Length: 154
Image (cartoon, rainbow, N blue to C red):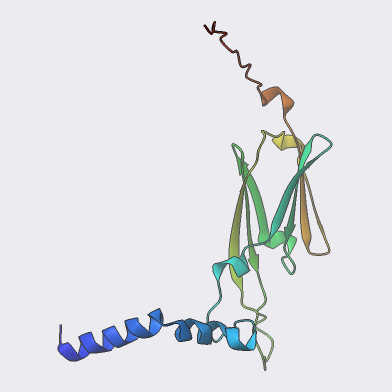
């Protein structure tokens, strides 16, 4: 490797390691959100979810604003629920003057705490929130008894 290239690489590595570099990337001094000109995190593209139990059912609420029903796929394998989808924000027939929302795919996986009755799942989208209601399969929940040995203490 040539010395000049090595020096350039070392300079770049030092810049990345400096606190100022990362403060500039995220504009911490100005308390601004990162812009698309910097880079965005993967977490922005994954829907936020709540999972809770209600009336012997597991319920997932997932934020999916702007995702059409036909761009959404839900599957369950064993106790792993997977939500795949695509945000489609680009319209080929428009002349954009500002375009900050990109088309992007997402995949959210949630491990369910109980087995469920797959054939009785209900789904609904209301005001940008996906609701998945899954009845718990009580027959598959096994309680394991715990026995204690009693020892004589002397």
